[in-house]
Length: 508
Image (cartoon, rainbow, N blue to C red; front, side, top):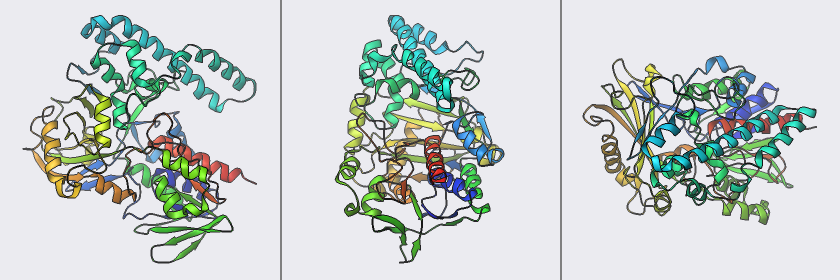
């Protein structure tokens, strides 16, 4: 078949690689000047920084992302190192101990800091273990067959009884059930704010999966070495561009083509079926199948057209809430930051009112880094990303796609300065020792991924959100990527693309 892919992020590249390997004629159209979407590494004056993915889940041996790379024959080209991250609140800093103290060292340390919360911490970690066990059974059931699959499903049903009481709770209700301290609630729920999702909107049973203990200590046993559901986290050596390039190579080695700086203006529908695409220059590319990634509104309302959609799908798309964006400031510095930040990545939470912080962001009010940020030093695991004796540093935080006051274009330097000033509270000397700087605002991200509203990470895990399915109501058209049913995250979009490719290849 002749297959057209719109977008060269990891969803498009993964689907294209599977289909090209199977002998189909694959053409990828990318409106930006380089492939990879946000799974890309940008470079300037001898330094390099990743655009989106930082500490990735799913790329350790036996994990879903790694298995995809193995299936595509490029795993040896995508090197990774198993690592963890730090977490700093106003009240405490949680860095892993030099000597391993077991999987519950954070619980015990938190008991010492918050002795009045000891009973609640014990109860929360029992809930956490129950959820991890349930997720572990689910992972085993994904590949099991026959009697084993039935047995695992029965075990999942029994395990679910232990957490069933929280099934209809929100994240804020879960935290209120276990803790009194606003600091503790922020510690376990802070990552939700990265999705610009309010704790009152987030499903309670999802909290453990967003706050795995293994993210904070790589020595804790992970799946598949154990049958627990805890993931390992990895950095990609040399930057995430290595993975995009490796998977793109599979497409090209199998006769597929990539066209950058090429914008798709329309998906053509004839007799109710997708028949190809029209490019910005008016060229029509006929196709047997079209796989589109990107924004759901841009794809369905812009490229397809409401006249070809059911009222139900239109309503579904209109009712999905999107994430907000980020402000990233990439720095090249000439000193070692590890005396201040011992790990490559650390999240710094400065507010305890996540609910209000999220609502303010959605209204366009940017906090300038005062409510939280993260600092990432990729050159600690990938020395090639900085000159000898220097380091690449990324400072970023969630930010409104559109500012309530001014624009990102007119305020980019001012707001970048303020964000780096906040980062200097944790790593002093960043400004004085900066050799080069690269700012990426929501406007820059909009242009890179070709959307009207930049949603960093895609569709947030808000109760009631239901992104469009991969298989669209239009025959011949599939929807993949971070705003599809697979949701966001590098591993998730790759798994979703793998599923779509398999369904296409298995079709009669």
